[in-house]
Length: 517
Image: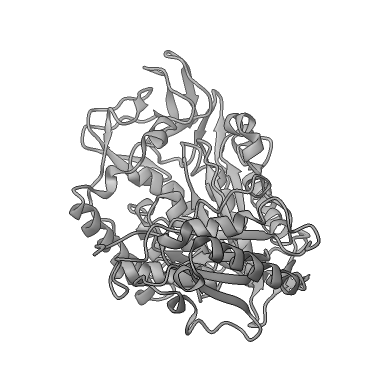
């Protein structure tokens, strides 16, 4: 499991002794003296914003710049100690990374005597899975039925649930496709996997599937062959068969009202944390992401895996450049190669769009101190802890393997998390440095702030401040254990801030790939 970074005076963080750069933990003026053990004292040659990189060793033009002990790019000009290292003097390192399979396999052990919970209170489903929430979903087969689905769900948004304390709500699951998208195409299969993943999610106690009636991806395709357990509360409707929008909405509301007492019969009961599937995601990353929230979440991920649970990393464009660290953890060459195959797919996909994977980081990432995709990815993979990699899945595929796994998704947060939830994630942890505010019903979203200033500015939208690691008021291990405890508490019913604000319905955004005819 990850070690704590080493703070020093003035306010900088040294991550590895061999690194060429350190990270500023406060704004440093030009001329600030930097005394660092093992390095001849020098002064800053430019103002260094908080979260940005400061050179502590000279680098020749074209030389690799190390952070986390890994290359984050090559110097586009000579760099001297005291220089600000960012987009003006650091570019992409195009060298191929050496890929090994299984040379760094670790099976985390659950610490004894730490009073860490091994059970949570969840909704036991007839097929043996355990949900962390108990929603009723109105899922659409096509965009043409989206407005009707929203009208039905809106009838229960602020009223109608008072006597059903075990029902978390009624949510509409709408999207922008389903008609001209060929079902057997790559995009059609991806959408179908996503919709079926939500239809079969353990956080739904009841389901109304709503279509127009003439779409290519029909209502019955979403439920036929799903293997829904006996007694599952599922209703299907099409607007054309029910006589239009008004008649459909009236009938849909009646169906949910009839379903509500039966769904309310579910009760939270103790379950082993091995039944949890944790989705790992980040958005609005900054220079602290790979130092505080991400490795602390990685520590919590390792705890869950050690207890028999499942944890899933995602965002393929944001592990590019660090994928060699994941393949070394693969349980087999086949698992490692599957990750590399997805990276190659992304290279072709971005090239077809006249881009490259190094188009990432975003402007906000760069303002927060991240320069290249290599640097961003090295910090992002820290969310996955140290556990061996047991499985690699395509977008929205059911996550079947236990332990630490990976899902191929874009880096766009709502699309990425939609894939994770479709795959079966029952809780999501979301790290952010700039201040992302994502919800992802029916799974709860736990927001982890990477730095204290942002947490204090946006504390009503954050669940936990991981910036205390840099502040020196908490260790990485302490925050990691705090995240783990929060995961278990949230799985047991504790509301997250995004749930308090009723966020998550509009963030259902399946990945759109392929032609629409």
